[in-house]
Amino acid sequence: MKRLFLTVAVALTHFGGAMSAQATDDGIVTVSSHHSVPETVDRLESLIKARQLTLFAHIDFSSDAQREGLAMQPSQLLVFGNPRAGTPLMQAMPTAALDLPLKVLVWEDAGQRVWMSYNSVDYLQQRHKALSELMKPLSGVAALVSAAAAD
Image (cartoon, rainbow, N blue to C red):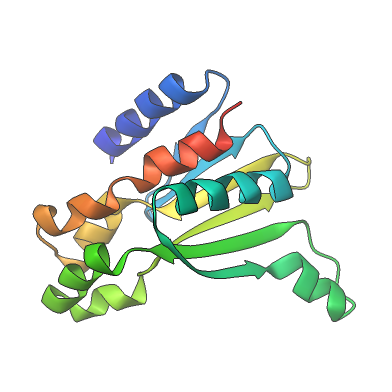
């Protein structure tokens, strides 16, 4: 876990000095964004398209809550991936389909700070007992999130 945190910290230093990353024991990596939730989501969607990944879903939880008369801080989830990357992993470890395609949650806390959270690739590898070579195609999620969050 320390190695994961250091890797993310180095990437964040490269992409945006003031950003912070928090890795938790449950495998969730959280990175601060310098942008609003809608702008962060737009940036992430653009990066997903530029990398020729498939955007499978875009869920706006706060808008859904509002339609039901409920208040919720801005919160949106993007579900994306590439079948060429995920299929070999799911063929070897069918339970990996519980965590694929990849997901990034963009959310605002009570202090109006914006965050991006996702499952670490190391966590997914441990959870599904997958070979590291099957995880390599998924490892770009950290750089994708960092780029979307940066100035």
